[in-house]
Image (cartoon, rainbow, N blue to C red):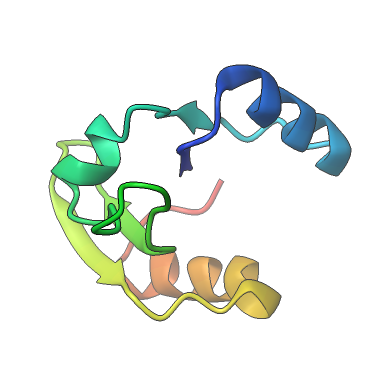
Length: 86
């Protein structure tokens, strides 16, 4: 995950969810801009999911992320794309 928030705010967010998922802080928007998800105002990033394989190849992009089912949607798409289960 990539967030435009600063590292401290992201740490607090991760702790509130009790997650160990990696969350990249991108307060300057450099990564968001490189992936084409930074808004024209530069204040927010689009909520898209990029499926990137171990070689760094983008295999799919979900531009219609639904917060309420994102976890299940990601698991389904990973299976569709043939990513190994852990």
